[in-house]
Amino acid sequence: MDLGLKDKVALITASSRGLGKAIAWQLAREGAKLVICARNKEILEKTADEILLDTGVTVFPLAIDLTEPDQIHWMIEETLDLFGRIDILVTNAGGPPAGDFDELHEDDWKKAYELTFLSVIRLIREVIPSMKKKRWGRIINMTSVSVKQPIPGLLLSNALRPAVVGLSKSLALELAPYNILVNVVCPGYFLTDRVQALLQDKAKKTKKQMEKIMEEMVKEIPLGRMGDPKELLHYWWSVSGRWRDGEKFIVERGTPVSILCGLPFDLKPISCRKIECSFPIAHPSDARLDWAKWGLN
Image (tube, rainbow, N blue to C red; front, top):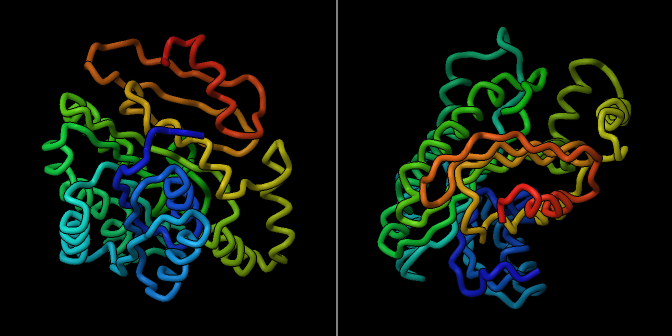
């Protein structure tokens, strides 16, 4: 698909593997110029090489820790020095550790807050001046389907990720006059390293086989399997849209997709509507068929 992203400068965080890697890969296929980051330099550079071989796009890997504000500032400065602007920011981070309330300590909450919420604030704060100057920008904050319904055993994620949604909706109002659109993508279960780690943790706690845990989880998905990270990429039409702003895209593989509408770019208020596909969909992009009916194109 052509999303009109050729030569746009995109910064994708936590993009050495999983959903972040899949997003970076698709943006490269659309012709965007990429900066990717992660903590593990070796895996990050391997990802950059793989994307280059597949797409011919040069990817600039910067190894940083998103919990360190000085490193975030350095990454943004390096990107601006290299390209002169940042058009697209995708904030993504590894989820906080699993655990119930009695298992979590003060330090666990502080670390999760730094990674899951404060890193998003710092990243956005750093890119806004460049986007305002160009009067164009797209910010996509990756969260989790847990913002819709808490997931047992993931208390840190359940508590902190909704804050990212609130931040995003508020910023959508503030930044829309500058043609900077802010949206949230809330993936369900995709077969990533993060999900596999959660499965292993649950198997250890329940003393069940990991395969059994997987079977139980998959039973709740109408299509009978988890999503592949590449399938999330069908949602990237939202990046180039001029209308969709302050929205929460809940991507649950094979289940109805709920989309909570925010305000359009010109800030004319509309009634908040909940749009649900009444049928299981194989790909999130199938939901596009209903946009014309709802007047959202």
